[in-house]
Length: 200
Image (cartoon, rainbow, N blue to C red; front, side, top):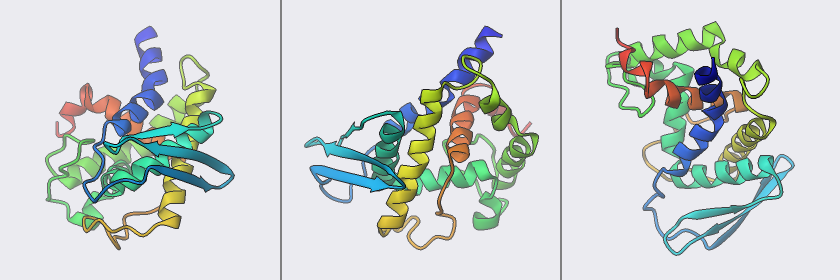
């Protein structure tokens, strides 16, 4: 039970850590200082000379907002691909036989990946984990981080044009919810364990 508790609590932290490790895009020099806001949340994002974002925020929701904004600005296509994966919609957009090629799925085909993640959704697995009180479930701070991350990602999508040819004008790039963020965190955790057996 303690192992399950620790794993569940770490969902949000694992996700934010994994997202923070995504490399900055090579699309040019990042701005030195960005003030991002939307949906009542805001953060200041200061980029180092190497393009590493440092988020200044008043609380965890605003910290999540700044992180979501900065990650969308740097890697919107990679993030959107991950959300497409955990929604179980890869086959619809890329065909059932293609490889997911995703860091979130070990399935050999999009159909295999979709079947797995749709099963997770239909079972309400992530919702059940989120409903547990801390420490078995995520803390209030973790929930605020996830809520803020989704808001930041969505604000960036609304206020900016995607120029990356990997997903510019793609209909699968769309707003997310805090539940989507939690589902992606769950996928990261599962992949390191039993996720290697998705195809059977």
